[in-house]
Image (cartoon, rainbow, N blue to C red; front, side):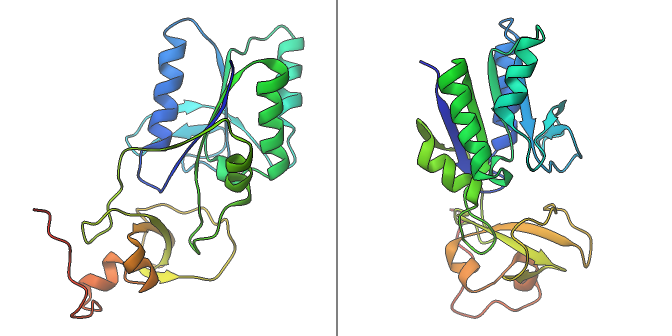
Length: 216
């Protein structure tokens, strides 16, 4: 039976890489998929991973009806055997409903990939709706690591290496930001709550009772 599957995790856990791998495996078997993405780091209409892999995708703009897009494609003689959605956390809840309808009405598997919570540890509306509707929610098994060596569980937004906890929920940035630019970093819960980024730790802001976790 077709399923709506939500692959979730923090940044740096390989979501986009897995999305590309799933697409590659199916295309190698002669299947054709439709890939949606939203606000990818590589630019509009791209799905990219931090490993440097990039493929073309359909930009799922705000207000776009994903179900109608698939129906129009098929009615024009196009083919769609499955659907991949990257950066699904940025979709509106109504667009997640449309993904569920693609599964139920068009009998297509939909594989959605996204971050569960934002830099304030609040659920993204798109991720919340996916948790509510998905047939399966899969946590990515590649563990992202905090600067201290512990498992990273939270996404932090930084400006100039300093963690910020206010601002719009969606601001596009990357882990390799330049000085003064908006960037993101994954942290363990302890260091997210203490707002201790790798930059502030290197600058000596780390208190004596917070020591890096041994890698042994």
